[in-house]
Image (tube, rainbow, N blue to C red; front, side, top):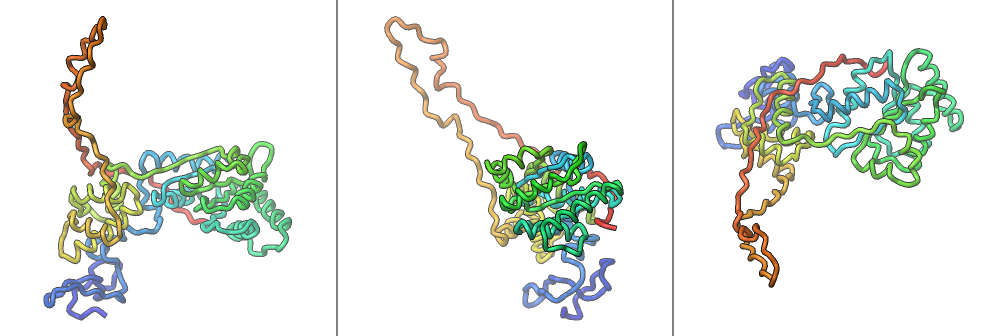
Length: 374
């Protein structure tokens, strides 16, 4: 337990107990870490926030909507509500695909949608069908595949009678085996003359594109009606992302210097998950030093702890360093171009432009929170 002389937590979510996770003791100078302290997280306690702004969980309340994220959000919603059958969302690891998906499911009310969400698709075809039924709420799973398909069909028809759209959503879909993907394609055959009974969304890393390009999966690829992708944040968006999450957590101005934000953008390469990890660790180091501002040194130390390194710089050749080029020798009877006299003499240097990293706060669209199932 923490010593009695430690200051008490003033955050509303605590009971005023001694639950500071990191405190500098006067002598000897070292960091006291109370691993068993239960209460607010470090950043929440220190900066008076309602919740941790850089949590690694896919909380849709913190979704930062760039232009590409808005397009994906609208596209996924459109694919479900318009009964397009198959939709695919791909993106680099850590770019917010699961958070985006959670926002879509949060937006659609339970009166309009019934869905089965598969988070671990490394299953056999039989196990996948069983997991699909279980997440749809079916508890009495027959052993016969024919009986399972019959139950699924009845569930889809019942949902249609109630005015609900039925969706099967598979996260980490790049891990699906070709056999399971073929099973998923066949599940797409539940349809009526004018619309699909089961809407299927495949969400995964960029490797999913390679999987769908397989020759033996060309039938599935042809059925994809909506295809979307998201990538890392631009360097100018990283500061906006940090500010957005800080304000969502109940803070005011985020305690990061401009240079620290520039280093975070460089180290994370614009990947939101890495931004969160670096920010949280840098805040911990700043607090341990009793600093109210996260400086580049804290960011670099956090990156070293996480075994992260900045993106390699792309060398830009200096044209002025190029050796002069001799003019071509004049051939007998051949006229020399007027431009020949300027060869090797038109030297110039490029002036880099600097774009500020900390821009205005990105406002996300407010959507009503709904439960997954009533």
